[in-house]
Length: 299
Image 1: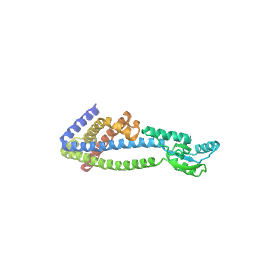
Image 2: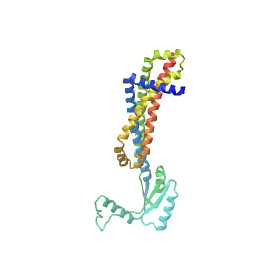
Image 3: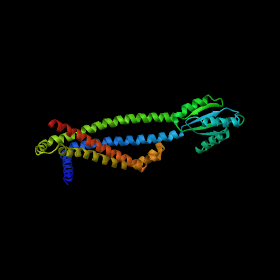
Image 4: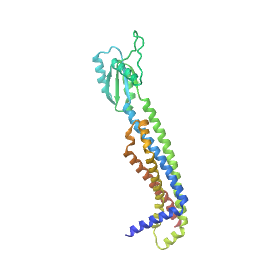
């Protein structure tokens, strides 16, 4: 029962302290909202890019154009050799006829007809092996080994998109983290000063509490809860803002990043919990730093 009374007292005092210094409290809360909005945007973009990266990883492959005149036995042996290479998932043989059918189908998809040119010198297509990889990083080794094989005329890789996206993700992640850290330090500074002003405005009351035997914890917790209140309000408002724009975000992410799983309800729940945890954490940390420094100096 005494513990519950202490909790009730701390909550009431935190609420009163929040509105007693309303201007600074609201400024700190607004800064929390800004930081959490940036964090949400970074989390959404990085998650989408990671999903896109996984999609591209599944498409990273090596194509080996074969020399003319290979026997069926030589092709089968080559398929077995390539399939045994580290990092290779599957090996598919594409005949010249199948390659032509694919080319014609790609033209039909865009509403055009393939012009085969002069019948006496038609388009020449080659047989090839399409090699899927279990690890996109194995592309270089597989390509190098294929290039040394006499049955292979040319090796084509599809790693450019993967490497480009990987570089974009790393750049966005590094820049985003730097921005979040700078904004987080600003939020921490705002909360520390907000609570410090609240502490100094009630220093006479704190001295009286100390004279009657109040412990540091009894004095500290109302101020910590006041900072947590700033973080909580900021987190709740940010979560509602994210939820409000969630419907237009979902189709955009599916279209841009090619991965609908990135915008599931589970993703939104994870994002909401992250925002709530960061908001509460930074509010508590700022308050604790401010009150601790004051109590240490007052001893």
